[in-house]
Amino acid sequence: MLEVLNLRKTYRSRGKVVEAVKGISFSAKLGEVFTILGPNGAGKSTTIKSILGLVLPDSGSIHVNGINIMKNRKKALRYMSAVLEGNRNVHWKLSVKENMIYFGGMRGLGGKRLRSRMEEVANLLGISDKMDQLAGKLSRGYQQRLAIAIALLPDTPVILLDEPTLGLDVESSVEIRKVIRELAKVGKLVLLSTHDMKLVENVADRVMVINKGRVITLKKPSELKAMFKSRSYKIVFDGSVSEALREKLSDFGKFVEDGGEITLVVNLKSADEIYDLFDILRSEKPTISSIESEELDFEEIFMKIVRGDEE
Amino acid sequence: MIYLIRGTFIRVIGEMRRYLLNLISSIIIFLIIFLLIALGFKTFGQGQSLSFKNTAVGYFVWMSVMINLTDLSWTIMNDMQRGIIEQVFISPFGPLVVYTAYELLMLVVELPIVYGMMVLIFSMANMSVHVHPSFFYFLVLVMLQSLGMGYVLAGVTLKYKKTQALLNLAQFALIGLLFVSTNKWLMTLVPIAPHFKAMSIASEGAAPSWGYFLTAAIGTALYMIIGALMFSLFSKSTLKRGELSMY
Image 1 (cartoon, each protein chain N blue to C red):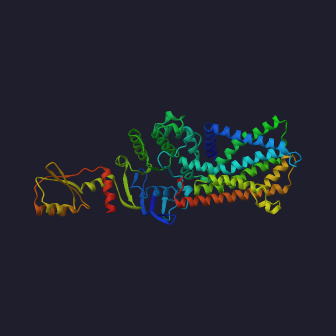
Image 2 (image 1 turned 90 degrees about the vertical axis):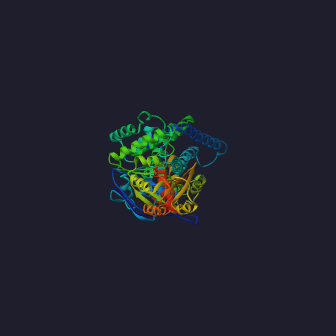
């Protein structure tokens, strides 16, 4: 459904040249929640805005349902809708209902079709009792729900959400997670950009981590977890550890001393390094009380990926 | 397209209701300036060739043109601040069509209010407003032409963002256009001037010559096309720089 190939974008401003995106490629299919993760300035927004034609890339191609967005933008836009920059996508001086009619009209929706879509999305997002309230008077959570409701009105197969849970309370975040999963279930492609690791863990089918404009990894969340699980261990030593051994093991992780217990928190750069680690342990024969595989949450995995890339 | 117009109409009416105080203040300022002109005319206008009626009608048209010229830029500035400009740009209709619908509907809603006020004042002063029917032809054309020029300013606003001072400057520049040489060929190319000359004749109840009809129509089409092209060029440049929402 969505194919991005070798996307490149360089910004030039007052003599400064910033390569925001350096050859990003990926494809995503219907029924999938595809997440783009990356630190600030990684190129997430440029990628999303390029897909929508809001930023013109220098080179590469973007196809939505086989239509090249650079060559036939208006036609390609019929297959996509988006919520960008948190809750700033609604007209604060219009009511919820007026917002839906205005933005729906902008997408060519009206009459019975618009009315039935308004009812459907208002029920899905839990805003049907707020239809006559001014958007500016709603809480941030409800404004975001309204922004998503507006994006859902045209019933496009592709929905792009840029930081959909930014600044939301726990309840609203949970609601939005449910809606995202619901959308994927009914066959939509949801392309997310977020910093919210809980959201990634709960809704993403695939995660693309980007840094400095390049793709570092593109995997399923379970694969990323498994990959890092096989690289993260805790080795608890029984008794003291010689300085010589500490020196030899320092490349594999950090020593942590808690009371009398000495623990090596191992972070392997690749799964193969475990053999080198065991070779050292076998030759030095320290007393080990336990070796445990470490459970990592998604935030730690993300940090490891980005740090690993920067090193 | 009909749904775009309907949705935009809802926005126009909604904004008008919620910014009611601003609308009332604008009308009051509009009327105060008019009353000051009337006072000035009464005090200093004796023996002048221009009639008061002619001046009054000209003032109302002039104010409408000025509002029309800069309104699109103000709307774009507000939409950039609100963060809804991206939604306009991802509409399959495109920003030019979406904003043209908005501006035309603003005119449809605002002009009757303004001209209703004019008729009311004239009737209070026991003056009748009998203009030649062609007046409305030139009025529509001058509004469209000022919208065409407004596209250029809107394009500049898209690219350079804070253009409040430029918009004020543009209003003064417009005054200058009315003092351009009366050379027929030159006047054809200058915006606003031929329309104003024709409306001045029509407001006295006479029919302008056919040359005016043609000149005004060509001038309007020309500036609409130039405006639309410039707006598209500035839009493209803004998208290339990735600065659409960076107000």
